[in-house]
Length: 377
Image 1 (cartoon, rainbow, N blue to C red):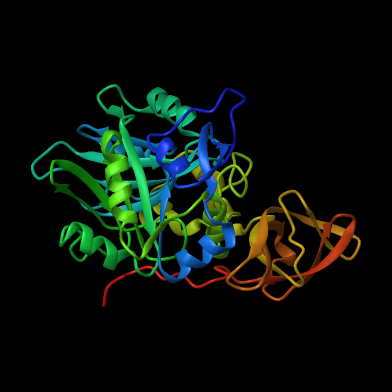
Image 2: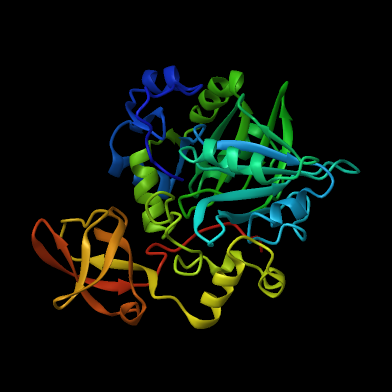
């Protein structure tokens, strides 16, 4: 997810009128008018942690990559193991430049139909999607088809009561999907793609729906007692507590997957074979270590450290905050920062400069709030 904004007039999403009717405060975000809050960020944050929230993420790019050799073509651009990704499985990966810098992070689902053409559903960040599409069109082989699903909305239902509510609405359509698994089903005449994933650290689902039916589905979901619409403000505080990086802030072409703590997304075979952009540099960083590391920081009091705040050890500048805010679940501020690797050990005492003051901070493990993904019994 990213929030880089265009200078052009923001576009509207399929649910724009619906959000306004629910009392949403709308703001420009990633080139679109988006709801930042309805009843309040903290209340929405806490509702999602205890019940379930509906997030409109239709600004994100939904793509299909298809054709014989589609997996190999994607592996030439991503460090993820796509060849071993079975139908119905989802994998987190990154689009990399030739130096191993992160152009975007994304999710790949194998949606190949039985006895059909290899097909992968790729969800990319909203602010980066046009650059991503141009990059993919330039680098994918001619025999591979790239389709932008412009007429699809994307809704996320997140929280511990999400599964119960969705089972009531869609009956048994979601089956026993586990974290990072997906399927599709028909809800009346509406074809819906669903994946058990999300961006809050809670159990949850993302639903790809024809835009013309988005208001019907959103209204039906929010008719359930567990589900309320949730804005971008709570989405950001939830993902920060979950220790999940935000593209355009914690990830950029100036960062690499290893420094960002995302080495898990580079599978064993890919490490052995390479063959992805920046592989030589990235594999060297895995072996020898990085100059900086993305870490979690906890602060006391109520004053949060925001993006760009400098991190110090004594008089030495050792890092910079990339995301920060107040953590409603924890009752104190938290942040993510890139700091010099020699000062990245858990428990290291540092200081963050906020409003010309030095605030004590401590390196803390992430996630700040434990993930509660459903992985089955």
